[in-house]
Length: 75
Image (tube, rainbow, N blue to C red; front, side, top):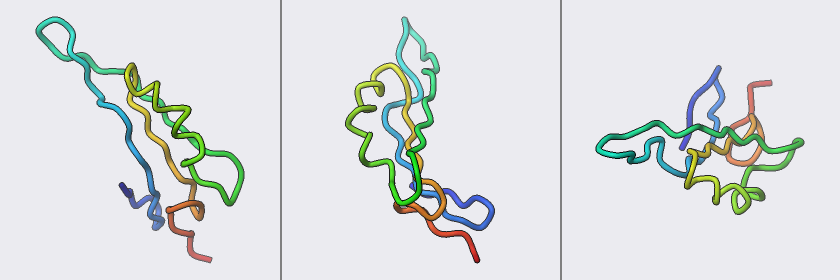
């Protein structure tokens, strides 16, 4: 998925639902926003480590501006 923020397209993946069934209704699950480390990387390296959290939370993995599949800011 992509979101345009201040002229830059940020790439992100969403793992897990934002809701879970409880009794006869739905309850919101906590959200984890995962940001990768230094420049030149993307979030793909730690997705396997975070996927188990998707049962209890919604995990959103974001590529920083100019990294991974996010676009670069204008010079």
